[in-house]
Length: 114
Image 1: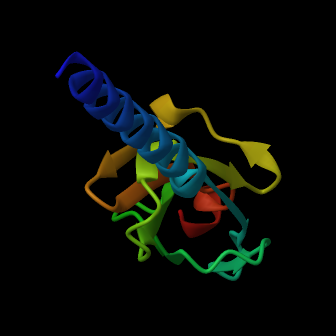
Image 2 (image 1 turned 30 degrees about the horizontal axis):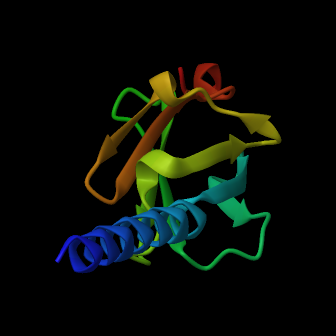
């Protein structure tokens, strides 16, 4: 009986460990985009297909709001690294709500609208 219990615990431990390793490998991702503030366009600089990007001006035209939707459930937004215009963005500077990342960057052209 002790041997059976030991084998059962060993199997459960192995199963749990292998799932954790698989999840860690699957959910990491890099979001690498370039924003053209003059044309209000965004281009994806990597071959990733697990997200979609949308940009718009804020109501006061001082900011560009970048919205990134994670469309592949294998990726978790909190595990992704965000790179905008070749600069890695600190996680404290953007919001995550379920599968949406929202980053608000200053519009370098906002004074053109005044």
